[in-house]
Image (cartoon, rainbow, N blue to C red):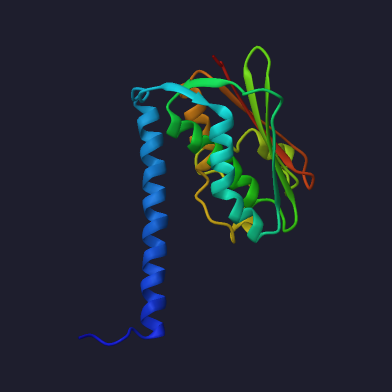
Length: 196
């Protein structure tokens, strides 16, 4: 029978597990982008409730926001909400990327909201009271591996692939994604898609 692991051994194993998890996530991100480059076929689509996807992703990420004393709001117009003809996992991944970024770049005690509007297209926006992005960086944030400020973001995880993947996912369904931001005054990322 083996004895208990020492604290140093447990810490080393946890560090290996963390690195493995980060590396796996990076490889999955790179695979997503490689498939987009190769014009890989769109996965099987089905009618997907936007409200259900938003609520599920918010429920999953709310503990992360609460750890940072952030409030996470959903703003839904009256009614059942629209449905999209998409691969459900793509929509949830897209929403997850946008909410994770908002949580990551919003200071302690900040606020994050996700809302949608139905016009000619469905417009879903994720807004935060975070750091904001300077004008010279706004056109580049959807580029692969681009990070706005390495000094400011060195303590934050990520390889600068999240928004590039979000753009690939939205373009898979002939949608668009855009960003509005004021330095020191938060950011809003909006994606637009046809709805049923």
